[in-house]
Structure formats: structure tokens, C-alpha cells
Image (cartoon, rainbow, N blue to C red; front, side):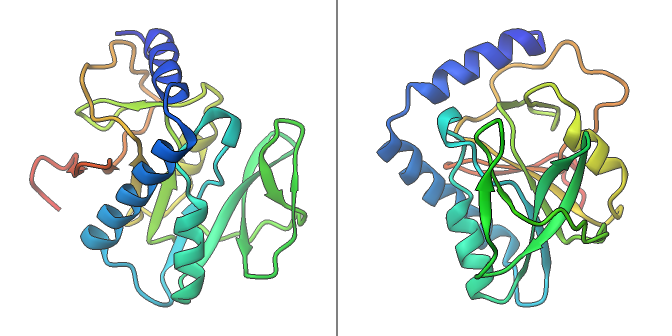
Amino acid sequence: MLKAELRKKYMQKRKALSSDEAFLLSEEILEHFLTYFRPYSGQKVHIFIPIEKFNEVDTKIFIQYFLAQNIRVYVPKIVEGQLISIEVFEDTVFEHNSWGISEPLSNVDSGENNFHYVITPLLYCDGKGNRVGYGKGFYDGLFQNISAETKKIGVNYFDPEENIDDVWENDIPLDYLVTPADVLSFFNGLE
């Protein structure tokens, strides 16, 4: 299927979930992430803050866990059309931007690009790690500028069902997809 068709289909599937269902599925995704990757104190994680009106995976529970375990947390913020990474702490002050996304008040880019994990938003991911996002390309830009050792991880309520037919040459695939049912690796068995 084409990205536009998949974007529409999976946006509708996500909207059909109740807030309770979405939260329970998010907890299962977090459990799978923790069991598979076993993050530990001092590691650095770049993670998105969910857009609640789009019923995204609730990554606030990930962030709470990471901060409690002294795992360093960085979140994205769009400043002058660019995605920057801001380190956050228990006392970080947030505000809603014009799109309704919660962001840190600070505009100070951490300059960090050596993350252990980048947990990325998506609407759909196929069986090859190709993802469908919102079409802005911010994460492809981020992926080009991070360490080659960084694990690029998508989180989604749904397993891959069909291939994305219009993958572009600049699209950078994910390394893993974490769903409520499983953790999928796109390394063809090699890590």
C-alpha cells in the first residue's frame, strides 16, 4: 500500500481505541521494551512525547520509568523548522505548542547525537522496518545525524501487515519495532 493509504488506515485504527485500551497497550509495549533492551542507569534515550489527540503510544510512562532509573532522557522540539534534542529532568517545565504537543519550555539543543536508543513515533511500520509517520521528515533528519550504534526503535499498537510500496531512497528504516505482542528486529537475525 502507499504511505498515504496506510497513514489514513492506521490513524483510523488508532482513533478507534479507547483511552483505556491505548493505555493498557502502551503498558504492554513498555514491558516488552524493558524485557528486550534492559536499559540501565546512565544510558541516553531520545523519546517522543505523545500527541494525545492522535492517541499515540503513551511514552510518558516510559519517561517516568527512565527518570526513576537515572536513564538520561532527551525529547524532540521543533525550533525554526529543525528537530532539536532537549534533555529533560523531573522538574523540567513543559508547554503545549501550536500543534498541541507538549514540549519543554527551553529551546537549548543538547547537541547530543550519541544515544543508546531513539524511540520514534509512527503510524505504521512494515516488516522491513520502513515506517509511515506524519510526513514531515523530522525523524529521517534525526536518524542521519545520530551515532551509527544508536538503536532506532518504533513503538506501535499494531503489527506489520502489508508492505509500504512508496519507500523513498532517503527514508531510513527502523532497527526494531515494539508492539504489545512482540519485539521485531529488522537485522535479518544479525545484531
